[in-house]
Image 1 (spheres, one colour):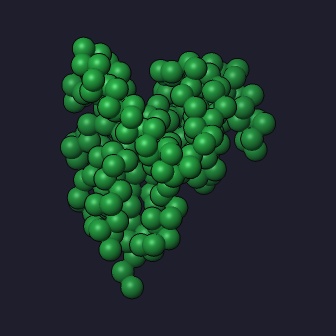
Image 2 (image 1 turned 180 degrees about the horizontal axis):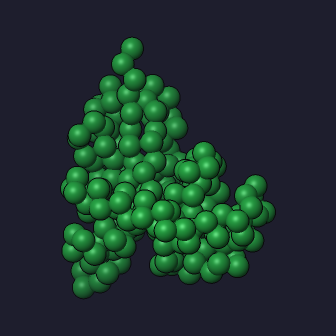
Length: 200
């Protein structure tokens, strides 16, 4: 059997990325695919592509923004994602925690790190751009928070996040969550049906 891979271009700043990751395990089970998470900086993607967050992009189109929120509520209800909360500090600057994802990847604990920080961001309402809050949360959840955050200052770690982000933009990525099945790109949590067909 050919091994199948689903790649997720990821940043903690996207609530839709959190929601998608919560429902992906069943899709991966059905398709027999492996998930690869590629940490990128959403702000960098927006800057490079001229895209904006929905709350900014549709600020002058309240009906469109209301519909985006309705779709999110429907998705949450359909999948029973009752722990989800909009972070009270939203938007949170994710630069440090995304560099932290590169550190976690380097140390072989990216999946655990993504699970933990997603919980901090979209369940527990932690202000994860506050270094003390981030270090405290990480240390309470199985990481050496101070050591991990210290590594986010390493030039190689910074460079890898930049390289990931630039490579994503070069492949046509303009927002998160973006998925790749081979060279086929899919954007947003409402494309999971198409992704499943592509994997099948």
